[in-house]
Image (cartoon, rainbow, N blue to C red; front, side, top):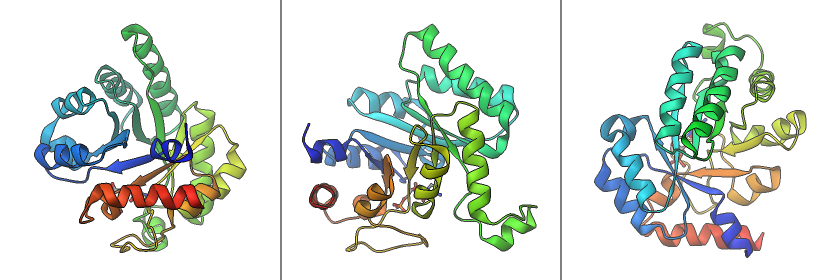
Length: 241
Ligand code: C5P
């Protein structure tokens, strides 16, 4: 595998669109992308049949529903995710140890039963949209870094395979939790792309250097005049860095 092919497998495209037509149009334009992220908006609009369609196109699904509920409910939802053949699935670390452990066990048991690949569970730590005054308002008095680390360590102890965190936290999470816990980073912006509403951004090359295993990229690619060209440009920049 050459360098570009390796990086192509590590770029996840965020399908932040409202319907199936727009999602499929992007997928069809993005040759070489392997993983597509379906979030709350698109999943609520189109449901599981879209996931089946994405898989039928030979692509992998990252189902980003950020599950957070009582342990039994999350474990059952994870089972359904396994049956839909999702490759990656998110849940909130703040749901607590029991919720995380039950989710991990239920993913493994259901994958075994169905004879399918076990999805990679990813824990969301602190939402990057929350600023410190808002965190205090909901009772989180620690600084954000400490809270992210606490929740990343908890996820690791519970057997979760990876975490989603902002580019600024990649290095510290890798350092403090070890290499095995995979790090998925959104908030990625090439130098030539607009920041949009993202506050703490990083270029693809720097995020990879800091230790990110996967990059989630939305608008710099999906809203580019040519999504395929934007994707290839990012791959070239990564390969040259
Ligand atoms: O368009 P953009 O590249 O900003 O998209 C980033 C994607 O990553 C979006 O789907 C967004 O919801 C998601 N995300 C994020 N920050 C987080 C967690 C997820 O931007 N902390």
